[in-house]
Image (cartoon, rainbow, N blue to C red; front, top):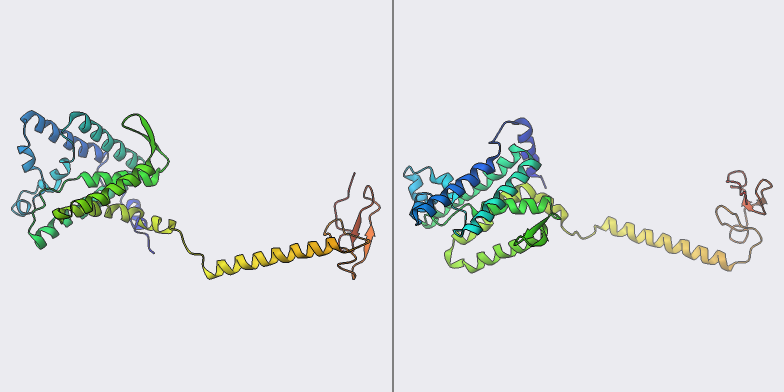
Length: 289
């Protein structure tokens, strides 16, 4: 299976100046600004001008193509601040690991798939997809971090240290639950799947290669042959042990009973009495004690 990640890396190599450095700052900044304006205005009217609306976009309100990403927060001040910090932390970590180009491509792919999904659903079902936000796009960063740093620990509720891989599994289960629970809101309930497409572009082949595999016939035959050889060697050792012999080579263990065609001699340079077959009488390390 061809790895799309190689195309991403090749593009990053050929276009080292592509993208916006510290892109996550602008994305989180837009979220913070939207949240502050909503708090100051005391209502959510502002959000109606920021959300994704396929029909409005087609009628010239192009800013919605970007501003719908900024409607990705909780209105509770504490939860909102924690969310903004989490977004910023994940984005910064990914950009440091991948570099600006690859991180921008990751976000751009997620944005593209989300917008494409919004327009397709509008043309197919007539739904303007006004409930579509950038929350799941931000969460795709979380799965990327969990894949790259599975054993990294974060403080859950600022108290409990939990590894990223376990949190990712929990969130994956929540995504599946949300899809099933909100099936009445189809096609909006499919957004978690759409948000994972950029993740699959970057990690799909790697995850596929990690899957448990059934051993091939070649591997199975090799294991069987290895086991047969070991059984034969063990049988030979037992037979040699049971046979009476007069001479036994101190190197290979062959005896005059198991190999009567061999000649055995004692080495005068070895300390003590050590017998060797004709192959090892002149080819062995001398015993000193």
